Amino acid sequence: MKDFIYETMYILRPDMNEEHVGQAIGKYQEILREHGAKILETQHRGKRRLAYPIQKFREGIYIQMNYRAPGAVIATMERAMRLSEEVIRFLTVKQLVEKPPTEAKAEAS
Image: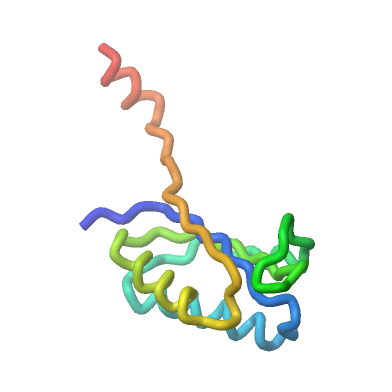
């Protein structure tokens, strides 16, 4: 099974303290690792104002994770986020990986 590079951005409740935020980040990273993913980067982007209220919250704590994983892992992690009360919104996208220029030229000819 081929691995792809994914990016998941999720928003945590703004009333969480730093310790709980760290535990939440660790929990989702562990879910990914248990299913064979390799974490490439995790960015804690801090508390920001939301464009519109979500579950009566006007702010949220933004976290971005980039990782390499098989596609089946995404459903497992998103299910955990959906059932969690600490995550108010999430989005996962598959990153497009540019082909090296030599491969692109070979395909064009």
